[in-house]
Image (cartoon, helix red, strand yellow):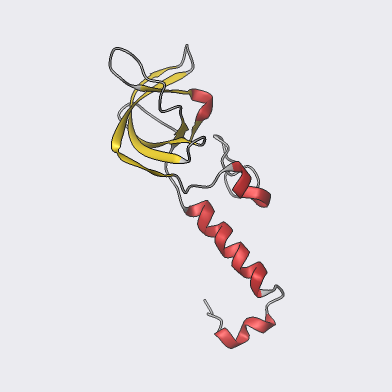
Length: 128
């Protein structure tokens, strides 16, 4: 593969600003590769203090025992969690959140994805 010299940049048919924007978008898309679930971190079960998520709010494939990221867009935070139960009849996932991992959520949102399309869809179309 040929690598462009920095002096050859002017030969590319896009502006430097367009290139920078594309680079930011590419980094945003690749920022997170594992499953994510949108949750209300205050919505926990009484018995075992698990956090609930709706199956429709899960991005990616999940299984009981799997480590995933939970996020709350309202507060802009995310945390690590383990899937403890999946109730397909009720459409719920029960998660044990690692509260010590709570952090700012820097993953892409639908708003920041812009023209990148539906890359956050739970059932993405595989590349041809």
